Length: 88
Image (cartoon, rainbow, N blue to C red; front, side, top):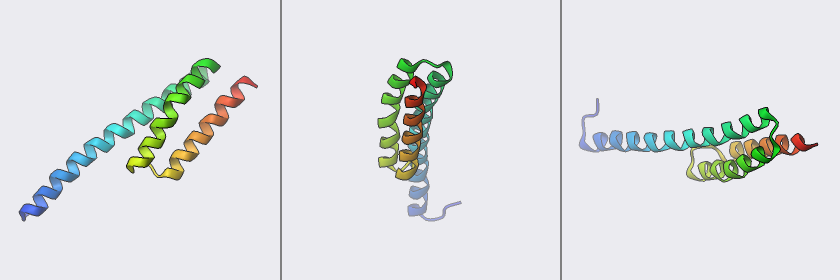
């Protein structure tokens, strides 16, 4: 357990930051899941709408440091590719 007051404060800050990051990660997963479900259903219009909502959410998570920016870009790219191939 933390002994100094600064160490106790650090643990409080870590707990608060962890909660925020968990919430952001959860939001990203929800948006990505909506795209996945639309793709599985074969609904191109719904998939495009869900993708348009998911893309900024992924990039926001990357900007906040929840995801690495390359990871976010890779996920966006792969989702875009799958949405595009749905119509073809």
